[in-house]
Length: 256
Image (cartoon, rainbow, N blue to C red; front, side, top):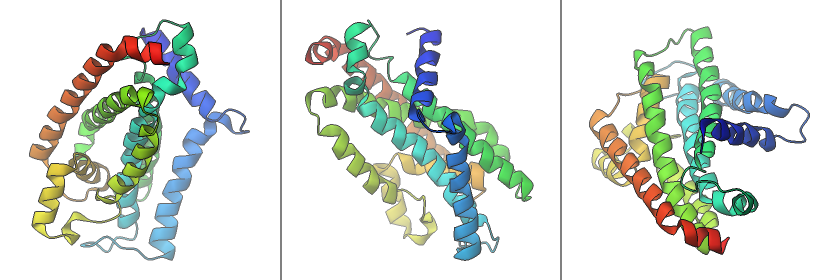
């Protein structure tokens, strides 16, 4: 797939997502803005939620946003990649596309949405004097690792989903459980030490979210050893997903 074709798919994906709405692509900004307002106003001002260890009014809202925004990018990439071959079956049947490269437009479109939402969060931090962490320089690399993990898992599941259509529904349910096993609304310090350590081994997204909290919310430290392990795992799974789709490409096309 050429860069021009990839961008065309990505742009069309963003356009189709809000087709028929009056505001169109403006929703790409409006949705994360509304989410930030909910976190900062409802949780902080109305509910009085506070992050353990700090009395700052908007600390918990920032903590939530720093976890939810990357989680949405990860979960949306994984879920939508799982169904990409079935959803794009009419195009696959008419145009000779590289099946391993096809899901790239999903990861790219979700990364663009993530970038816009994160930019709004950073703007909020600047306006309210919270400041931006120097670890922000790691943002592109952490996003790359996160999306590689989501894309690799999604490609493996997408190949299976062609032959077993219950896969996507199962993953949608599993992602709900995965969300609550990840420190997005809760703080790792609230759990006993061994519990968090065990979760780090079985939940590769946990070190990623801890990293996002350190980068975007200034909460905690970046777990570099765990993060490097997730990076190796992510690119290993991505290569496995690529190999599996290449191996099953003819069967996938015939079945579709």
